Amino acid sequence: MRLRHDLDAVLGLQEETYRTNFPGFRYGPRFLREFEKLLRMADRAHHEGLFVAEIAEKVVGFLWVSLLYMEFDAHQEQALVKDVCVTAEMRRRGIGRLLMERAEAWGSQQGATKVTLQVTAANQAAIALYEGMGYAVERYHMGRELAD
Image (cartoon, rainbow, N blue to C red):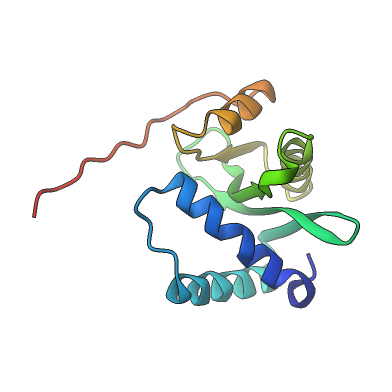
């Protein structure tokens, strides 16, 4: 990823990703500023990988992967996929799979023995992709709304 060149396109991908996967999420200028700040920090960190998929010099997908050390796991070095998204018009064409394969290759190059990710339960297309690539549910992340 060339941060200066690709930043606006990557930020543009986030709106649909967050609105679709996190109902009620308040997407706006504050979120964009914070996300941009995180991307800039990640771009300078050796344990973070930022990648884009391009077609005809247009960004159509984004991947953010990070190397983690998990002290209490058999797979102590892990690559965590923090964000992966593909533009709506380019989905179901193999771009998500290519980005995930890039995450796996990057993780392996960094010494990771496992790749992990989180996916929203309602995102059945992504779940099917991940399961088709051999990913399996290991934990459930559960939540409950609290009354005012």
